[in-house]
Length: 224
Image (tube, one colour):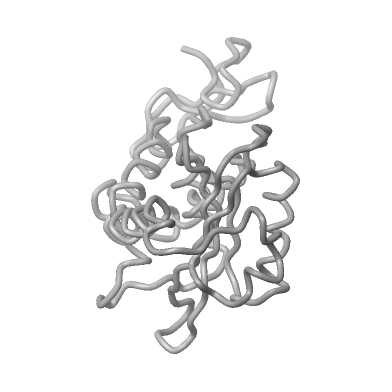
């Protein structure tokens, strides 16, 4: 058996808790046990949370399935997302699609927008933004794409884009954003808080961003 925190074998026996032997790791200075009653302490719990979130389960659903508290699930979602960094996309001359989708934060009257960039060939997400749909908020995303010297950028007919994207690479016509529109459908199907015509919505901006990071880029990281 190794330390559950740092995987070290440099530990000693130190006391009992509920008649279960506790150990003290000399490397990371943490206490641990060989077996835990509370499900959240199991090493595979974070992996289960991530998979359930990607399959359309809400926070309370995950809590019921894993038999842990909803507050623990929320704290783990934030912890998992903090380990995920926006990937460095360095492929030049690609074709990109940009689109927005609406959702709610806090209540059904508070509409927010998710704007994100999809690379056409690999369908990978370059970056996203959660907030108001305006020229100021969308511009950083556009600038990031322009640094990649794109051959084409496809968008819908939102009147903000023509002032941000050079005319020679900007394309707006019917069906030109089919791939990202399909991704919108995936997001609404796989993320409970984005489902339409239901009672589901996100309570906080930070949890929506964390959930999107896990969905877009969680599979790129060995987090657990």
